Length: 439
Image 1 (spheres, rainbow, N blue to C red):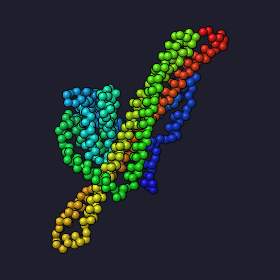
Image 2 (cartoon, rainbow, N blue to C red; image 1 turned 120 degrees about the vertical axis):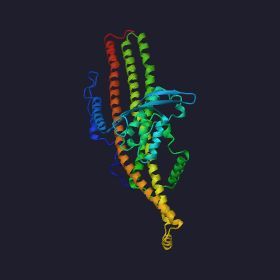
Image 3 (cartoon, rainbow, N blue to C red; image 1 turned 180 degrees about the vertical axis):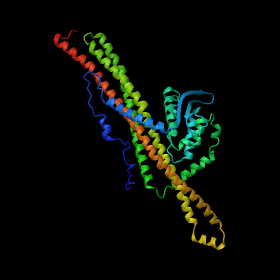
Image 4 (cartoon, rainbow, N blue to C red; image 1 turned 60 degrees about the vertical axis):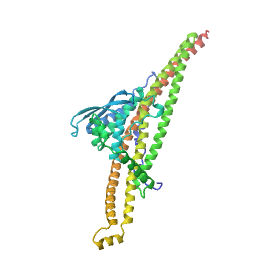
């Protein structure tokens, strides 16, 4: 890979931001003379920048979109055998392939897994948006609290709308069944059986162990990009969660710290005003820190973690593409070893085909079929790669700009809050210089 030439459309930065435009947003000075940010503060300019982009994207998406899906209204189901959550899936569409313009069904997490697996089987090299992770043992107790359910609902909503926006996946028969059929059980039985899935798994493992004889440079570059992207997203996700943890610890300390000043002010008449000012400052800082944590948890963290999972999805897609090519190369080598000039001569002399020749002919048909599959897989991945990168950049850019705007607002308010007790202390110091302390 060290000698590979990286195409221009892949070798750029993870986020293709216009540096001049984006940095200009943060280049304006602010004035806090009156305790409030000026109208042209970074916060207001970032919000305006984000609003213009979102309006443009929404208008463009509304023009091209003809399937609108909403996931809402989660309900808990408790029985003697199992406990699970179902979500209402409402679909509105103008597609002629649908018999009606609106559908409403209820689905549980396993139904979403079924849809994803069917799409991966039918479109192995298309990039299918990841589902939220299934709960792990340590979070079993928490999987029915409101925060968990709402986080999962939003992720499932994004999953279905990514498919609805996709030009190929949106036309899938399985997607239509998922959106329209009241019961999925009959359709789940039509899927591949256990032995068939095991056979596919073993064949994929064999192809993976065998490896590729030669890999097209563009896909080698894609693989390197995905590995690098995965490492960076995992790092940013980890750091962001550590920042939230530190903010939460800071907020807890502020909540314990603030009341102390109000209690102190009750016993110090002369110091009451500045002490109350400090206490008020601490309370406001605590509230703003709590809002900052909430914003990071609801806006930035879900987006980052979503693309951590996307990186794993991309790696799986690349492996499936490689497995198809590896199977083609193996069959092609087997065909080359069987088809010899001597066998062809025997077939010509006898006027018919011997057993080896028949096997070679069958193998040739398999090789031709695999060659078509390789070409289809490569073309599908090429097209989806560009689409995915455009979507990824837009999502991350939106999350980072929103976080930047919140950070600006947070530190502007924090600075103004800290000025309040300072002014009170200066006023008290002036009184002391004039009349001296009276304790």
